[in-house]
Each structure stands twice: as structure tokens, then as C-alpha cells.
Length: 192
Image (cartoon, rainbow, N blue to C red; front, side, top):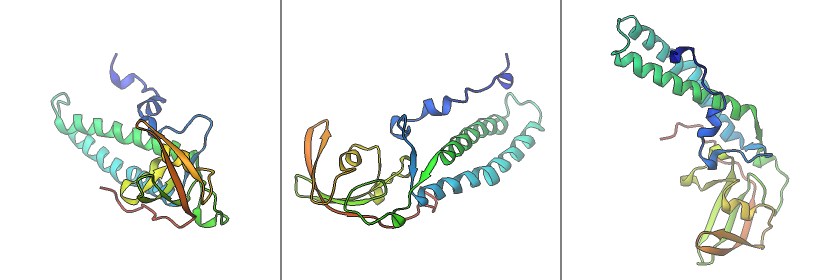
């Protein structure tokens, strides 16, 4: 049977995700406003710019004759499937998103989603991280996913608390120095 007449598994997108990008069962897909906007911008770019340009290329390549050896056609169809898969993924993520704005949160010394937390490691090094959504992690900005081991150790603790971080190397104590709820960089600029 031709691949043209088979339907792709609609749930294949979820199965292909790495574990760190899967929303835990029974949890909401928390995002900051900046992360939500970045995904929205990417979706717009794919739907209104990349996909239409690619379909023009595919139609042109198809009009050139034999499709079995036509690199533009073959590559274009493959790229179109990738774009369509990403569009479905983004639509699902945005549809199920619960946007939490750190600026509108009530001031608190307790760590929740969207908090910026400064803590002291056992080795004396101070670190500051912002707890963000699964699709917003960014090592350069010290944005960590709310499902990461560090975030899970910090969540619900308060300034001055010492929490335990379990790692493959053993257990480490983290002392929470400061908890703030600040506007985070939007992340809407194109990523490398």
C-alpha cells in the first residue's frame, strides 16, 4: 500500500518526545507568558511563512516530471511532514498551556512555578535559577524546567530552608537564600 494512503499515528508525537519534555501525567503544562509567546510565534512562522513557501517548492518540483529521483520533491515532502508534526505539537502544547505570570503572583518567600531562586550549594557556590515550563528551559539564562531535579527539590520550600537534592553522586544540601517573582526575559527572539 502506498504511504500516501496511510495515516500517521496521531499520538506518535508524544512517543517521540524525550522524557524531559513530556508533561507528567495528571499535571498541567505550566508556562510563563514569554514561553507561551515564543511557541505562538514559532507556530505563526511555520503556518504562515515556512509551510506555504515549501508547498510552492513542492508543487514546482512535482511539475518537473519524475518524482522518484527529484531531490527537491523528496526533500520537500520530508520537510513538510516535519513541519506538520511540529505544528501539531505546538498546537497541543498551546492548547493545554496554563500561563503563570511571575509578575502578577502574590509576593511570597515560598518557591512555586515561575520563581527566581538564589541558593547556596554545599561547595559554597551561589546559584540563581528561574523555574519555567518544559519548553522554556535555557541553560544560558539559568531557566530550569519545573520537572527538573533541582526545581523539584526547591518547590514549596521557603527562604532560609535547606532542601535535599538527590543526584546520582549522592545527596546534596541546598540552602535557599532568596525567592523572587520577577518578569523573565520573553525568549521571543529567534534561538540559535
